[in-house]
Length: 264
Ligand code: ATP
Image (cartoon, rainbow, N blue to C red):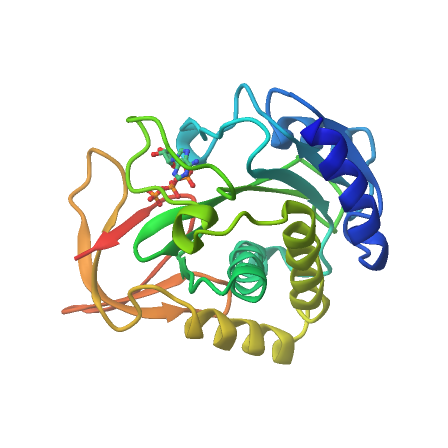
């Protein structure tokens, strides 16, 4: 029932965006990223959107699970073929987190922050996770799958999920998922439009910095269980979307995919 509501509402809401012009629906699937990666390997076009009302194998980075109650959240993946040099692909993660944060602000009045590289927080609790994966390609233009799990109308989380929140918990208001998704796609489209040019990249970084959690504050960066954390002051992100960490021995550039960040 909920699926049909969301599906019908989205068809209406997505008419004006290029992203999401084509949508694949699942009431239940393994993972929207898995489905979008399959679609990309079969030649799926830029902007193809896979949406699910529930996932049995939703995942985050490092094969961690993404837990979401059915029918209450936004779970979607987009195929993107951004017009951008491979060295700058990290900016897509930033653009996505920023688009989610901006759309949440506009639609709900909540005040989210982005947490480098791929999360959106409200008051230091995670409301959204983003997972970007890529298909191996021999073409110059890489194909990315950008997956988003956004906690919308869910009111409780399992004990395995720490420090999570949802939009309804933060605002006390039930949120229209279709309108929110359309707003996210609009914002993302805008950020992607300029992502191949120096001026577009500079404005993306400026907007990202304006919403960035921990900017100018001490943080600890973890490179996995066998390495001691690196601590320093968060100086924001560099031209390729890398995290800049000021340490006593100089500023280090850290690339996503390798690290997790915590307040220091
Ligand atoms: P961090 O950067 O904080 O180390 P991450 O960005 O690597 O985390 P993700 O890959 O985005 O984390 O997401 C997986 C993690 O998110 C899981 O380990 C789990 O703790 C947490 N999680 C799972 N489901 C949810 C949810 N619905 N809301 C918030 N957090 C969740």
